[in-house]
Amino acid sequence: MANSLNQVEAHFPFSPAGVFTIVSYGLPYFRRLPGGLTGGIVSSHMPRLLSDTSRYVLEEAMPSPTDVTSGGSITKTTFNVPVTIESNDMLFSFRSDTLSTIQNVISWLQGSNNLNGSAVASPVFSNLFTFTSMRTMFAQMSLPHFVAQENKLPYTQHINPDSPMWMGFADQQVAASGPAAITTFQGNSSARFTNATSSSYFANGSIQHLSHVIQDLDAFYNVPDEPYTERVQYMFRSDPIPALGNGDQFSNGGGPAFIANDASVFLHYHAQGVTEASQTGLDLGPFGDDRNPVNDPQPATSPDPNDIGKRRPRMGHLSALQQSSRASDGTPIHIRMDGPGFDNLDVPDGSNQPKLQFSVFVPTAEFFRVMRVNQAALKFQAPQDANGNATGLGVHSDDNGLERFLTATRRQNFLVPSRAHRAFPLLELT
Image 1 (cartoon, rainbow, N blue to C red):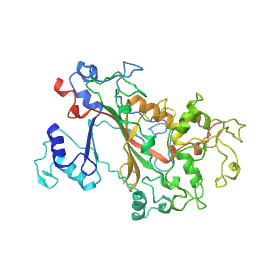
Image 2: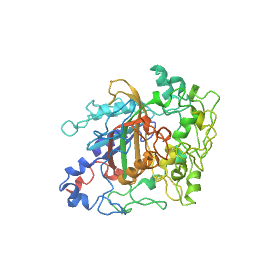
Image 3: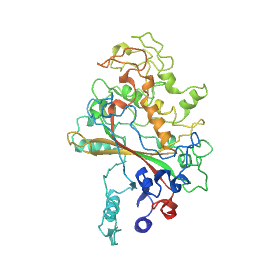
Image 4: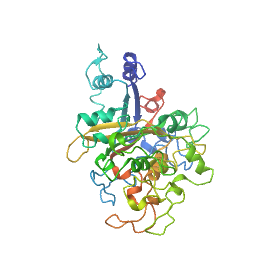
């Protein structure tokens, strides 16, 4: 394995012009080691949670509160697919500016004997690996709009042509991703979650969560129910509404794709000893005329005339995440490595659909689980009857973030070791 990874880097630079190769390992891999998860090899080297030293940093992914599960109460309007918790031993993540480079590396690992145009013997993985699935994501401004045009998707004209994402906004990685150190097991001065130190075997390692998400863009871009002012509140917040968009709320996205995503709002509420979500989701009542003390009045573009000029309890995706996604000084505790996809994996009718190929680096699996529970924000959502009508105070389900437009069909957590141990970690100790 080490020789194979070195061969790749000998033929392609470790850069966007070449290829970045990241190797991570799931719980099934560690169970194969002598003694498994409870044996001396794993138990003496796997970092543990500072909050509970009986627990490892790597735990299996769990269905989130808004995932569809067999026998569960959550349903999705269009893609009602139960989530699968996968059991892969390993995950290879390849990143490059050129798709053909990634395809060449993957083909070489699978036996092509050709690496960047040179005759190079492929590794003999046939008796070692079975490749279970491949997921392709793309990242470029305007590319989702272009893919939508090429495939004549019905909501093409509503996708912002400047956006690199299907939902028309841009991931603001500069202000919304943490420094690399905070996502590692030893953390940094802003946050630390594990007992790992700089001399630990898994120092500079991290947890990588991988999920596969179908996006219901027919619903997200529905006309007339989802103007820009609704979508921007679902994605970000309502305190204040980040942008009111254009006179035409639908064409070319209806408003700007690039919205500030820094720590200022988080720090404003943190200084008061509360979270933004607890305030934006607050319903002062009375039932039927729900009022909120901090959110902006709903604009004239609101699809519900009864909401115009009213301050309603609402929940933005970002507001919900920031219940736990930032350290007390405002530093993000994660680095996303995701992007749009377009394929038929797990789609019930076999059609190609917009996807979010989600991947993120975090310091522990428990950190991601909590962040995912907070993202769902169900504790702020109003109770409702079988027809979806609110029966009590809280955020109405159709004003609660993005979850109803997303169906996660696969999830798994992996441990990413440092480069020094990226080839079959701990095996040398057996």
